[in-house]
Image (cartoon, rainbow, N blue to C red; front, side):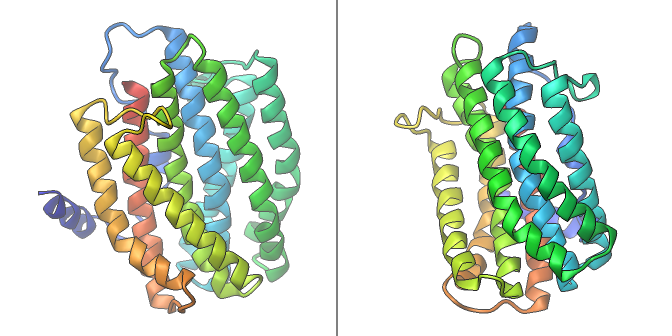
Length: 298
């Protein structure tokens, strides 16, 4: 059944039509009765902070695509949109943004983590502006070196939110699942970014090793989300809808994984294959993002 669903999805969607609009979908109607506004606000924070990790990698992925001639104009547009959304969401996480459902951050530890990200974003953002304003190799090399520290800092910030908000506000197992599910969005973008960066030749052997680790983390995390894992305090899918959504993500990943593993093992990827990978990455991101919103709504 799910294979038919996926084939139908691929047949309907065309490259370039799956845009960042899916990243700003409203939350799914809550499955709980009369949820507390504080709980809903905390879950939204973890969700959108987790999305920042993905955006840091999406920006670099689209920059690499644009410079590599992979759907160049579409990639430039998506990259600019991702950078704008990262900047706007970072401000919203710290200062509040009613349109995004974000309250002003008052916890000192959470705020300190977000401020650290903002400091790194200044340098990364400048490189991003340079490439999307006038695509060039120098700017892409800077993006290649700057995106990692931004991701690490943002990931630490999400971890702090999971811990702080999971202490008496959100059920810890829901906070953990929301964090890990949100991280999956990032890992899809990170894997394909690394695949593209390998072709640029800046640090191919290092990028291959990193890609192998990214693939492994995505697969182990998806398994834990689908089955539950007491060790990591991750519950099994708490609703049938989430279970089915994760099954769909698995099907899309089953297409991507062998090709990414071959690249990590030393094989090359032709330009046509990179275009196909870019397309499937958009579909995977769309479906994983839907799963995250379902977790938030639970």
